[in-house]
Length: 103
Image 1 (cartoon, rainbow, N blue to C red):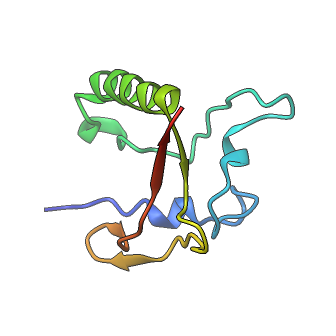
Image 2: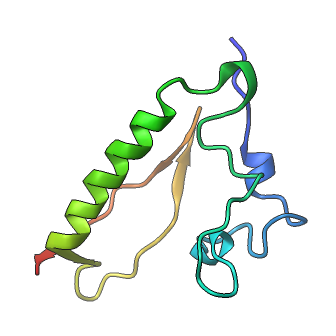
Image 3: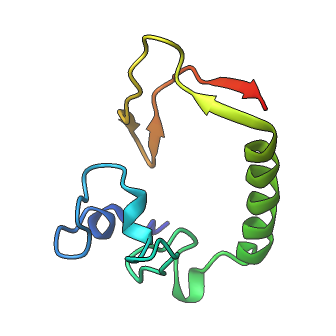
């Protein structure tokens, strides 16, 4: 089994402005419009590309749009969010709490 390791591209300092931190600005241009980054391959590429990419994108859009329309999200009072993870075959986020407040 061959598993592509995309972390080397995702952490490449010659491609990303701040590769070791979560930065949504990586995907926005000067006007705040979405821009596609060739280094970001969430569904892989080539012969092994995910066949369900379009379905996954549509489902994720509907799911998150509904959540964001109905709730505001924040860390619990007094808790500082962290981006720490457990390293394995993938990077798994450590457990954390999140407050969802109905709008």
